[in-house]
View 1 (cartoon, helix red, strand yellow):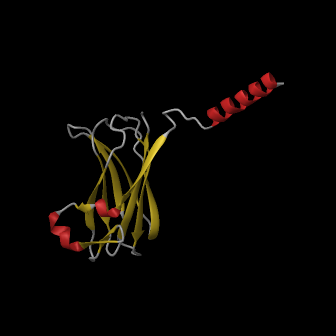
View 2 (cartoon, one colour):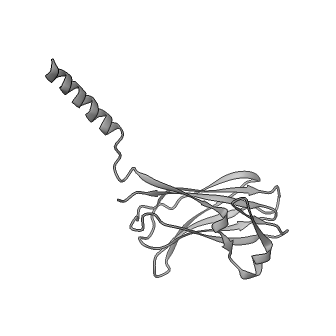
View 3 (cartoon, helix red, strand yellow):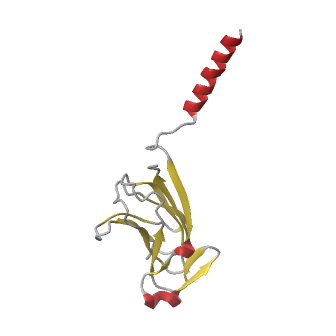
Length: 161
């Protein structure tokens, strides 16, 4: 009976191990970057933004472009990103909305990107790049409409380890 019990326990442990194991193609690393990592794209807009409560805010009545560096966790990954979202508050307006670009570039400057446009109020803007360059940087660039805020960027990268 001990041999049968040991065999049953071994089968159960093998099944549980298989259940909780993922391949590298399925695994992902997730990071969240605060809006405070973003900087005005143009020096002339330095006085047009404020940082507050982990967000970057446009305090003016016109659009302001910002650029946000996003640190790569897996520089050798060329499978694209699993998912990326930009969390924004888009102040009600019929004229202007957020537009954000997720960029991946190689060391010689060639880039691939995806973009999305927000709606009024709170929004999660999905950005997905299906293939990217190894070793190049990631950036998110956004046009922040008047009286609106960028709160954070969520990045899911494929785990290539």
